[in-house]
Length: 548
Image 1 (cartoon, rainbow, N blue to C red):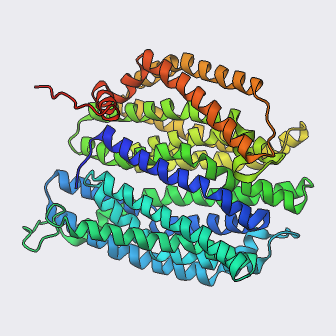
Image 2 (image 1 turned 180 degrees about the vertical axis):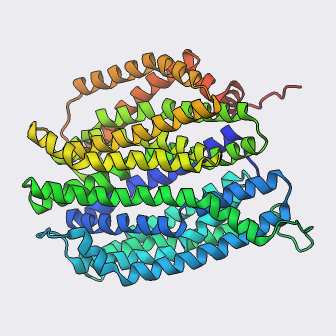
Image 3 (image 1 turned 45 degrees about the vertical axis):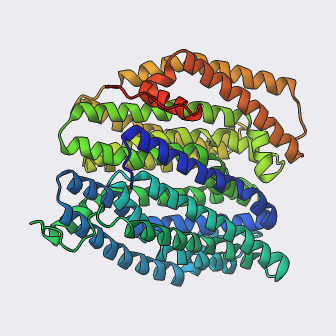
């Protein structure tokens, strides 16, 4: 199994997650057409609850395992490393079974909590059924995550990344094939079809587990799964304590994020209902913000997800060796990659909101307006993910609690007031909820970066310089997109026209941005001259010359 450097690992993980998220984006086009707005609301309710319970069962443990494995591997405690993996597996199995039972048994009560007094849309029994259908995934996905964490702790990114691809492909085949068969072959109810679709998460997880175990069995010696391993003096209780101490901050933060997202959904449902929106509009707006808009922005979020896979072990290794200069360099590099890739992506998606939304969900008056603003939350989410991951890698858990929870609390406090304020000034109320989310993330990011600056004297001069250098290519890209849209008016009721516009304009816009970035030396600065030359040689089928 090949180990990856920080930048290479980031690229591999990010590309893999981008592919996974692209698949996750585009399967919703036929799936949404199959189940319609009513089925989409059911799917969104089940998915949002599943994420909360998945975080309860596994949040933190995979990353904690990755940290512990990397730390023990760096110090050459190979026996303790293997025992840590087995302890993590046993712990995650117990928790995931317990959480599955709770979700399955209390699905009707959770459905009642979601709907409240809202009438005219989905029923409590329908929501309870799809929640129970997705709950089976909790029996396998947490175990899968811990196994991937073991590999990532060795900086083996490619295998865990490929397992994600397998998981997504199988899940999508199950979602589309299962829902189609349920509706059009066996003529079952829409609720049953959505239940079959969400059960696909279990099928995908099983497939990925089989692949990972197969790969690991062929590399037992490399991963130190051998019987004659010299014993370390580290006791199991010490390992368990270390895993739990590393996992708890991740668990608290991830659960806080998921619970806030759930509360955000409740605030949207209740406030829009209070302001006089009808039930179908309330469900459409709420699920567009909490689920369906986010499906499209996954392509942006994948940058930070891929980044964290490589960033956390890299930061842990530098921190373990007390090399603060490398910690600073890696944090700056992570922020630079996020800003360089995500700023043009979110701006481009916002400018093309109408055709993009039309491709996925058809022409709609509200959808594109929601998405044009919602997409900017992805940029702040990515920056938050990087800064939070850095703090957790440095074991600054109290700071993580304060910065993250303060941001989420501010977000929750501002939600309803901003929706009411926007409504008062004749601005769509749902924009208030989106702006509250951006303010919450921005606050957490600022506090985290300020702490790292004050406590460890980390500098962000490189990031500031990059932002200034990015102005010219970004403005040029925006001008190109706006000019082409002005020249090319289309009918947004035609999906083919939407696809054509998005493809042509995004290709021209991306070419302008990356060409100018390459000519001004930004790309070389962000990714490194050596990696750029290696990449160019690969796509041109030339061999790189090794420097002596």
